[in-house]
Length: 213
Image (cartoon, rainbow, N blue to C red; front, side, top):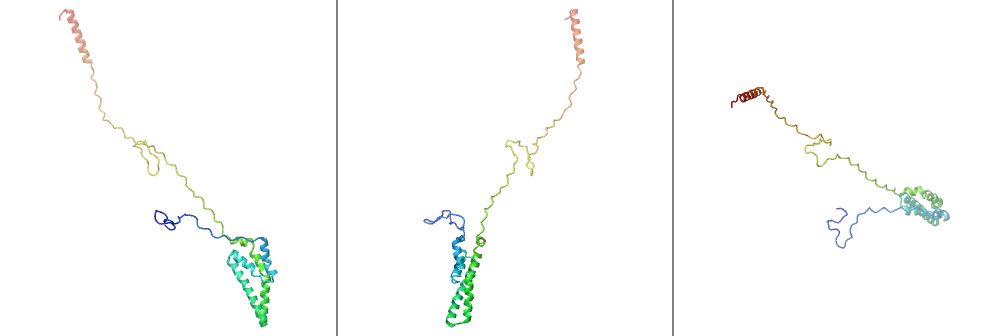
């Protein structure tokens, strides 16, 4: 896989083992300078009559490295370069145009860098250049498991479950077999046998009285 050593045997002998981890964080932007340093940089163009007029913008460009800070440093460095060239031309050739150009650039380098530095050194500008804090990922949410109907392992083999509903139906019981019924045989009355017994008894008593065997 990408970023890992191929094969299941890990890194080669003597190699550095691969340790997964988060990517390196970008370089942090430095904060504002102290109060004393900010006052000195703000007053440097005024105290030097514009000769250090490009210093405050260079400090901001080096520390924050933003596009508009770099553009400001380029502008003030260009004014300083124009002042030096105009002063050289006006001193040697006595050119009035170069003299006027030098005076304008000197005026701008004397009074413009201080307001520019104070405006761009505000806390709001510094905080606007910092990356926004990354929110922590939300905790994964899991759905609660649904309760399943309990099914005993010793249920009747005739129990059935209705498909799609999950509730057991009434157990199946086979219908009792219907045996053929036969009509009962009527019992004949025994009155005739009783009369015969009575006649036999009378005959035996008569013979005993008459002495006949």
